Picture (tube, rainbow, N blue to C red):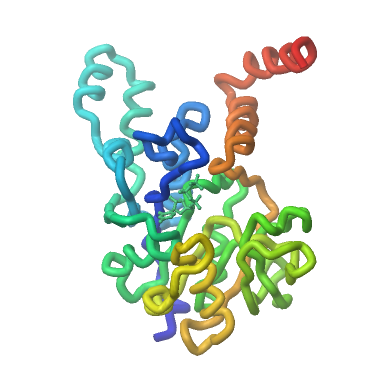
Length: 300
Ligand code: UTP
């Protein structure tokens, strides 16, 4: 079926990974709950989905899922304590996350890879195009990416991935896209995908980042996709199948993102994201920047 003009309303957020790079913090807490300044990383992602008009959010969870569910639920005890104190400002902060979207949860069981996590969403998504957002990638809300991807999917049909130019020496850390230009300046046609290529073998310096708008044909492809790199079912492998044969689920396009993105799954980038976002905050920024300047001059 041509999915090009059906409105997209569902977002899937895989959050069942083990988060081993952040141990021991992630021993009993999902890495998506780690705070970026004073909000858990996952809240930025749900806000992004809601901001792009996707108000039906399915989170794929694993062990330790309770904090994720609790965060997007009401907390009457806290709300009544803050109401009694007359602290409307903090009350609003508590209520914010439970009012963002209609939340659904599905359990992945064994973390058998990102592709397998996406496949767990099949019964909920049904026969509609849908978005996938990875909690590790934090996209600055001032540089909207997902809304543009939804627009591109509505125009071209099929699936859309988010791409970002990286230093060619860093491409081995990412999935990499072979592309052809399109009539839209920020859109390319994806002709192939390679997972973590050596720089000499990379078809471009365009890396896949954690936002996708997918045709539901991806579910059948994932069911047939054998475990790849690391013994995990890879979403990139399924996307490669879609890209090499348009008859399966329409074309695959890429939106080349040139905005601000933080990879909060990496400890160094996570710390940089916190420092940058804290500096930009009206309430914390001025004092924090004064301290940061003197810390850098005196201590480093
Ligand atoms: P990562 O490759 O970053 O793995 O997953 P991870 O386990 O979360 O983290 P590290 O590398 O061990 O520190 C990319 C995304 O896919 C989800 C993760 O939650 C993350 O959002 N994922 C991964 C699943 O939901 N299930 C899986 O089986 C694997």
